[in-house]
Every structure is written in structure tokens, then in C-alpha cells.
Image 1 (cartoon, rainbow, N blue to C red):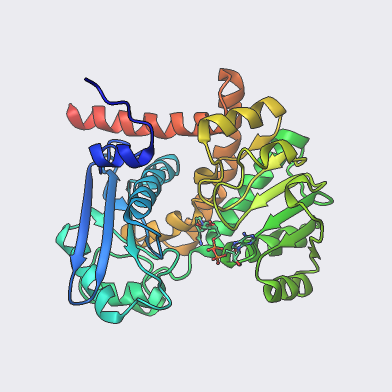
Image 2: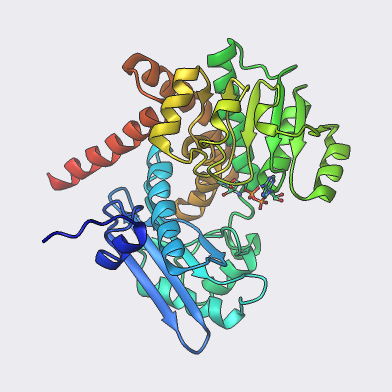
Length: 367
Ligand code: NAD
């Protein structure tokens, strides 16, 4: 007799790791546990065909282990495609530490985590992410060389966010060129959601170019500061998704394009820094295409940070990192053209290019 599986919870009981919704033929998943420091972490290595799996370590108060596992699986896969499409010889990986970084994090825990990273002998290289800092990366660097984003005083590349913002700006200009016929953003109404490390620098670029920028953030003090500093307008409407703007730039959290929001969008272009902006890549990518809303794939235009970090591994300089980031403009235009000529969504087109690069490399190595 076969038993029908109806809930995700039941599915977990059957295939707790390889059966997860976010599992995508990941090469290796490492569960790290240290009783003495309280460390509970998961390292996800999605793909190492192009090179070592590089991706940040996120410390987050996950409500349960399934959430942490799915996050690391989803994020590490995203890193594979981000590096592949950016032409970097890197694979995709990511790590999560379960806990509240403000309460649970200790130097001993971070050092222990660094030892786990070291034990993988370079298959995984870590970096900063939500809940971890440059100081943490320096601490990890005390026990392993397989870490990036360390302090400039240690030979690191420093804060990647300004470079990420520059790449998003380039991707947005490419989208404006394709959708409105000109890359010029002067006079364009642009809503930036989230004015943190990346969002603020993006606002700087946009206001300097004469765009009509509106900003929104849950941090009201920050909104007031950024508005004053760059002359950006504070968004005061009831619903930001139906705001009458040309461009929507999600720079806060993922999945803001979802079943609830997608039909309210008035913007003709979506271009922002947040990872995983489409709640469902296939479904929402297709709806945007059908509505004629041009979506600049997030993993393509927010790659400036990883391009910058890559410099630490291969040794090129800051100017070269900016030049490579500037090239996001050309790649984004190429993706739009490829999507249109093949009837694909822009997300599918970007993914196809990234997957081809990995497949070509695999073939070449097999020879
Ligand atoms: P950040 O934490 O510095 O800024 C995020 C901002 O969003 C904060 O000001 C926060 O208050 C705000 N925010 C949170 N929830 C919000 C909500 N519901 N509505 C409005 N605002 C909200 O992060 P960051 O480094 O600027 O990164 C922004 C996004 O870009 C993140 O999704 C991140 O994963 C992604 N990203 C960042 C980089 C990088 O180099 N920093 C690289 C690639 C992708």
C-alpha cells in the first residue's frame, strides 16, 4: 500500500536532506556542531566545476533546522550562477550559523567555525554576509586562509557594498536603455526599497544623475538621514508596490515579487540588489514578461561584491574590479536580447548562460 504524502513536514521525514525543496544536486553539505562553543552551522557546496565554492556566512535566528538547511541550499546555488555569469572561476557555496548574531555570537564560536572551513581544504571559501562582520572574517583568517573580505590592513578588499551598488547601477542603466530607449536615468522616477550598505550608495549614484529618487526603509532614522544627505524624497504612500514609478529597486530583502505584489506593480523596470527577488523564479518571471515589465536578474546585477572579493583570490586591483563590474551593463543588455530572441524570461536567459559556462568547463575538463 502506498501512503500519499501531503505536507512538506511529511516529506522531511522521508528524505530529510536530499529531498529538500531547495536541494539542487549540491555536491556536499557539511553539518558542523561544537558542544563547547554552541556552534551549529551548515556549509553548502553547490558546485565546484568552475573553481572553489565561494560564498558568505550568514548568522540568523532560524526558527528551525529545515529553514536553515533550505536557506543554505538556496543561497549556495545562487552563488554558483552569480559567479558563472560574471565570468569568475569560482563555484557556489554558502554557510549558515544558526543563532542570533547579536546575542549568541562569541569569538570562540567564530574561531571554531573557521576551523571547520579550514577542514575543507579550500573546497569552500567563506566571506561576510548578514550577521557576520569583517572582524569575524579576520578572526576566521587566524585559523584558515580560505576566507575573503578580511580587513584592508590584512591585505583584504574591504567592504564590497559600494562595488555591488555600482553593478546594480550599471544593470539598471542597461534595463533603462532596453525598456525606455536611453540609459539616462535623469528624470526617471525610481523607488529604492532598503537604503542600507548597498541602497544608500545606489541612491548617491541615482541622485547625482538627476533621477527622481524615492526611498523607503523600516529604519526611519536612516530614511531621514539619507533623504537629507542626497535630496531623495521619502516614500509616504500606503503601498510601495503600486507606486507610480518607472523603476523599482529592491535593495532590502528577497521574494518581494510574489503572488501578493506582482499584479500591483506599476514600474516598467525592476533592478535592485536584493538576492532572490522573485518568490518563484519560473512563475513570477513569466508573469513579469507577460506584463512587459523588464526584470534585470538579481544574481547578474548584484555581482559587484563577489567580483570585488574575487580580487583577493586572484590578485587584481580595485580598478580592475570596477572595470569588471562596469561590464555588468553589457552582460545585462546581452541577456535581454537573448531572452527576447528566444522567448525566454530574462531570468531563464541569465540562467542558461551561466549553466552553459559550467557545462562547457565540465566538458573541457573531461577531455
Ligand atoms: P543592509 O542590511 O545594509 O541593508 C538592508 C536595508 O534594508 C536596511 O537598511 C534595513 O533596515 C532595510 N530593510 C529591512 N527590511 C526591510 C523592509 N521590510 N522594508 C524596507 N526596508 C527594509 O544590506 P545590504 O548589504 O545593503 O544588502 C541589501 C540587499 O542586497 C540584501 O538582500 C543583500 O543580500 C543583497 N546583496 C548585498 C551585497 C553586498 O555587497 N552588500 C551583495 C549582493 C547582494
